[in-house]
Image: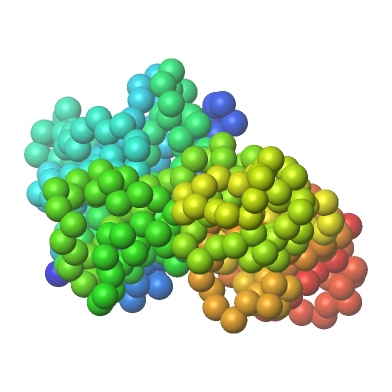
Length: 391
């Protein structure tokens, strides 16, 4: 089975695709494509992208890049990412006339597991020649297995708009899981993400305790009818109440004490007793404690689905910098954990994977020459983690 994948970010450059409700298709398809690319590389697959920047591609140029990536072969998967428009709601997947619907339905199933409504997996024929596919990404991509994923409608009257804005990473990960399952490979969840791989000695009770959820919630999320687990089994971990997370609520775990919690959250036992109207220091597992707001420094509270990589990327810093600031010797995180983040000035940018001076200049409304002048650069070469002054 194929282990080569081409990821296509639909539209780009002068072709924005559909837009509305704060969503521009070309931007979201690129974000989703980069995510899938990074995850598949991490899982050991050979992966290429048709575009990595906001670039204009004609249909012919796009197809040429697909076929030049790994050749015209049936063992090459092509995943073309799109956002739909037209007032509907939910995800759709289009597959080529030459292919079966197996992968398309796997993708829909995984998107459904992430809470997205799903519409259908389908083929569409060219009216003028019904032996050919309607869409060029299926029609002109030779013998490859070409799939187009429409993640939702940006003009939906339902919940697609908020889901696309808030859950696009989960949807991208859903496609990753579908691809891995289709290729019969070993899926490794994102570190700190919403999935857990069962290890020797695990039980539903120990996993539930680790993630501050109940056994019944795990069973319900995974359709389990008993408590039997297999090593290597992947379990979806239910999301905790985001309202509780945002309001500084901590859920007591086994082994906790008021002193330990006060140390972890940079407060005092007396403050915890006062804010929670406690009459003694006794705690019970599952008890919810209000945590005082931290006013010093730049602090981030870990939520379900976070990883150090994700937090670093979203806060324009690096994993190593977060670990240094918090004296961490592991990448493991727990929901509710507070992390100190660097207090960078607004005019400092930290180089990430895939960055170029041109891209940074464009996204920050400046020029390559200006960035080079401010940073005394005599080359366009960049390194991940490098700090750049911006105008």
